[in-house]
Amino acid sequence: MSSRVPIYAVIMAGGVGSRFWPVSTEDNPKQFLDLTGSGKSLLRQTFERLSRLMPADRILVVTNKRYIDKVGQHLPELPAENILAEPVMRNTAPAILLAAGTIHARHPEAVMTVAPSDHFIGDENRFTADMKAAMDYAATHDDLITLGIRPDSPHTGYGYIQYDPADASPFKKVLRFTEKPQREQAEKFLQEGNYLWNAGIFVWRVPVIREAFRQCLPETFRQLEKIDFRDENLQAQIDAVFPGAENISVDYGIMEKASNVKVLPVDFGWNDLGSWDALYKQLRRLSDENIVINGTLLVADASGNLIYNARPKTVIIDGLKDHLIVNDEGHLMIIPLDHAQDVKQWRQKVTESAKKKQEE
Image 1 (cartoon, rainbow, N blue to C red):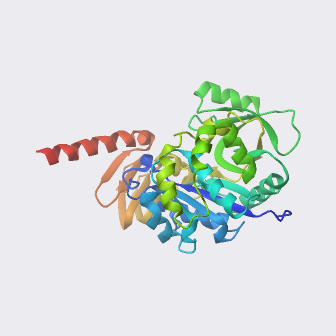
Image 2 (image 1 turned 90 degrees about the vertical axis):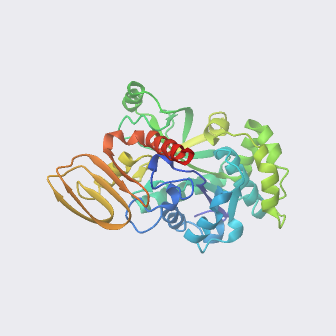
Image 3 (image 1 turned 180 degrees about the horizontal axis):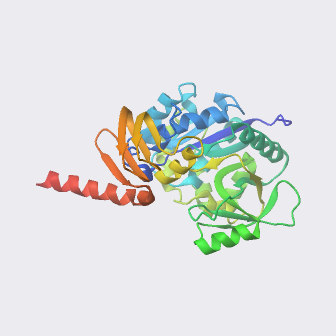
C-alpha cells in the first residue's frame, strides 16, 4: 500500500448457516466447514486470503461466544485477544462497531476492512489488487467504501447497489441499496447497467465508520462507548454492554442512511455460497458434472449431482440426475437440487420428529 496508515481486517464469523443443514448446525456452522473440497474451512480460506494484505495480529474475528474455541482451532496463529465474542447475536452493525472500537484503541486512524467468513473468491490475485486499491483510497478519503460485484445474471437472492452512471471515477457514488428484488426488477437492473451485487465487503477508516454510527445509530454508538477497550478484562465488559445494542444490519443501519458511500465495481469470482444449489453451480464451473466432496464417486447414467460426505467414502450412483446427497454422522438427505431451498423446512421437520420421539 502507498499509505503508512495501519491496516486491519475484520472477519465476520458469527452466523449459523442453516441453509447448509444437515452438515451446518448451531454447534458447527458453515464457516467451520470445508464445503469446497479444498481441505480448508471457509473461515481458514478467508483468513489466508486476508493474510496476503496484513499480518495475523492485524486480523480480528467477530464470532459468537460459543465459537471462541473453534476459531482458535481453525486459526491457531491468531492472537487470542483478536477474537471478539458476542454474548448474543445482534446482527452485523453492532459487531462491526465492536471491532471498530477495538481497533480504535490500538490505532485510532487505522483503515479497516470487513469481510464475511464464508464466501467463495475464485480469483485471489484480483481480490488482493481490488482490496489494496480500496484501502489506499480509504486512507485518504472520508468515505464508506463497499465492493460491488458486477452481476452476470438477474439473481434474486442478492442485494443490489445502484451507483451514479455519470461518475467516471473508479469509486462511484452510491445512489441506493435494494434488498433482494423480484425477478422482473432484477432483470431491469441488469439492463440499466449501473447496478452491482452487494457482497458485504467494506473498507473505511476507523474514525469515519465511528462517526457514521454516531450519526446514524446513536443509541448503539452510545451503548458500546461504555466499553473500555483497553481494559484487560475486555470480554466481561462486552458481555455486560453488548446485549443492549440494537439488532440491525450495517446495510440498514449505516449504508442506506449515510451520504458518503462509494462503491468499487469488482469481478473476482465471488459467490456467497448461500445454499447447496449455489455451491453446486460454483463447483460445476471448476470440475465435472457430478461433484463429490470428501470421497470417491462411481457413476452410471448420472449427471448434475452434488454429493457431500462428512467423512471420506466411496459413493455409487446409477440413474440419478440433478440431485443433492448429503451424508453426515446422523442424517442422509437425498433431494432434487432445485429443492435446496427447502432444507430449512426439512430441518424443522426432523427437529419436530425428534422432539415427539422424546415425549413418547
